[in-house]
Length: 70
Image 1 (cartoon, helix red, strand yellow):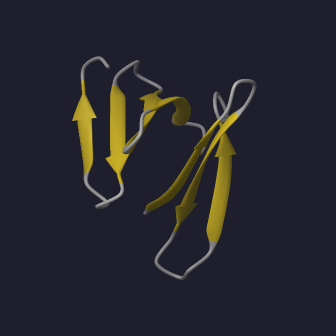
Image 2 (spheres, rainbow, N blue to C red):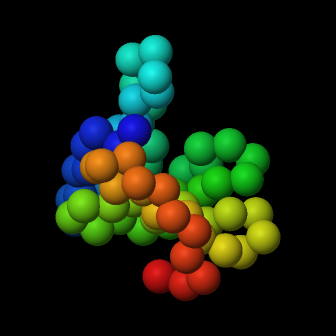
């Protein structure tokens, strides 16, 4: 689940929490795994590029959707 977005002039981060309560913080352009890389963030969502060059967004309501472009 997306729980935080911090966007600055030089660096930007998101924080995700799994069902066990473990948190993970990713910097812009960092990979979540071999298939997903954080490529953009907005006020209420984070956007990942998949290995097949499609995109996935996740918002604070834990809604995950595939998008062709962002």
